[in-house]
Image (cartoon, rainbow, N blue to C red; front, side, top):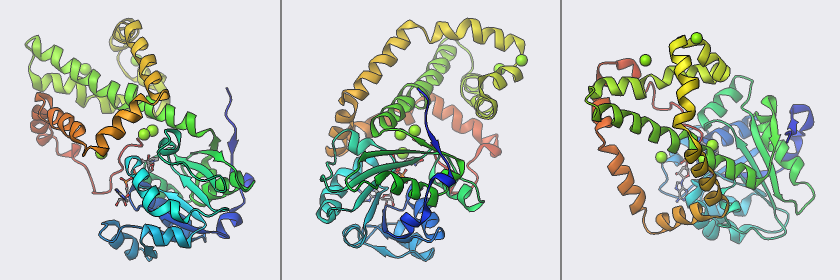
Length: 341
Ligand code: NAD
Ligand code: MG
Ligand code: MG
Ligand code: MG
Ligand code: MG
Ligand code: MG
């Protein structure tokens, strides 16, 4: 399956410049979209709840701020950039009452639409512009004249203009400078969840923890287990980021490379692949989304307990001590980007 890619010349900035855009939320993505839209000559207002911490930050940047409901009433393009699990409530309370025919509803992730947490009326355009980076990187690249690649999708084309509108929006945040990849809400959502569950978050933390536990159970020092199973990851991932698996394998010793080819497939074996397929099934049939939403709507106690148990694992205790010996590992500045998940 080849993916279609669109660039600046394929997008007409004047479309979004002719609309009133409400950005709901001023977090990682929200601040980046709102500021870059404004700098692209778009009439933008930020929608935030009265007590929201983002209010001061947005106002300091000279952006107009209204309540989400006021912003939605004013706008003809509404961009939902609050956490996925907060979108159903925000939609019902503040967005839906103002979704008159001809307006457009935009997302940066397909979760709420794909799993039916929101059901926009037929007269409204529904599209997705999902940058493939955390918001701070999206903003930084835009500011330096470049951009971060985006995924673009249209779920509902009520006006016949949803696709050019989405591309125009992508251009205004720098996305078409790098390239806009056409996809669907379903593909974007399912692959995003699979990546974070099977590989980036779930797979990786389980792999690190299991490696640490096996070494320490065998009597090795937890400090040394921490270095070998967690700390060194950064070096390996940086090489993969720059040049793929090949660059990483080029840089490691032949001893490590031989162990990689001969032992890796024994760790990630047929059982693991079957479980990955099952995880993908649970994503696609809505089991995962239902489980998450159920927890969120009951106060998040399951997530809280899991978070607490993970935080008290011996690996974290030894890690905190070792990082104290390595001041360079500390987070540099408050706005260091969070991962794109
Ligand atoms: P965030 O957590 O950084 O920001 C959330 C914003 O929403 C804040 O301004 C917060 O005050 C507000 N908010 C929080 N809870 C709220 C509630 N209950 N009601 C109303 N407002 C509330 O969010 P984010 O990471 O920017 O994610 C926004 C969207 O962008 C999500 O759909 C996410 O999947 C998507 N996305 C995020 C990234 C990323 O790197 N963070 C990348 C691509 C797409
Ligand atoms: Mg080593
Ligand atoms: Mg080598
Ligand atoms: Mg978090
Ligand atoms: Mg992701
Ligand atoms: Mg994600």
